[in-house]
Image 1 (tube, rainbow, N blue to C red):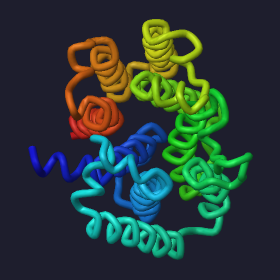
Image 2: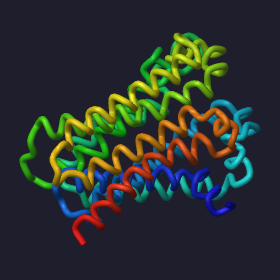
Image 3: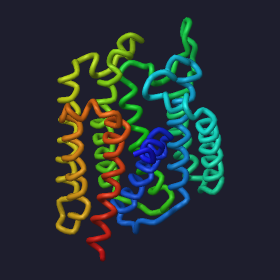
Image 4: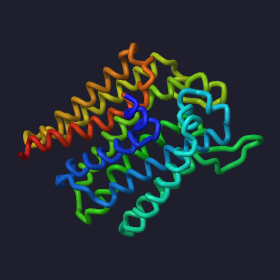
Length: 287
């Protein structure tokens, strides 16, 4: 359990989720799953961004060190700073090894991601971040996750893929991430209300927000049923549907909501689970 806590609190866990979603993309595109330099870009970029966000939070709001989310930083401050530096170094090295086209497609995504956490405007007496724009936070997260984990393998491959296929993949990934992110906004409802940030749960309430998350996941399943309707695509369809059904249980079974690792363990873990399920079904199907 302690090892799991280290993986989750250091953001290595969520970074591995990004890697396995990208491997999932390889399989969806008809590629053979393989280790590739852009997986290191995805891993270190995710690790750096999530820890950068935490660093900015504890530097601008020192009182955050006393809450459960950031308490790990307070206890392991030096290893945390080392992790931030190491993730940045790893990201820069992996970028140097990447193709020019990958860097071009990654640049706007990286800019959005950085300014999600770092303030870029000063409004009256506080610094302004992209995540402070009303209702934008959840859409930014869904957009960045879907584009980064899908477009990088496409650009790197130098192959032409069916546009409808790619569009449906982006839609599926966006809907899935959107659905599992709404509970995070429900958790932060009181904090966001006090800061004046408008989110979906603040607008419609907790129960209706959970309903929206459920609807998004059901639409995800319907898109998958349409997209992977061929008999030879069952190795993609079944794990996609299974991961969605498990996620629906996590989203709606309220007894789980009080578990300390509900958000960063279970909900974030649904992305890792989906990638692992796709890889497992692929291995069984072709072996």
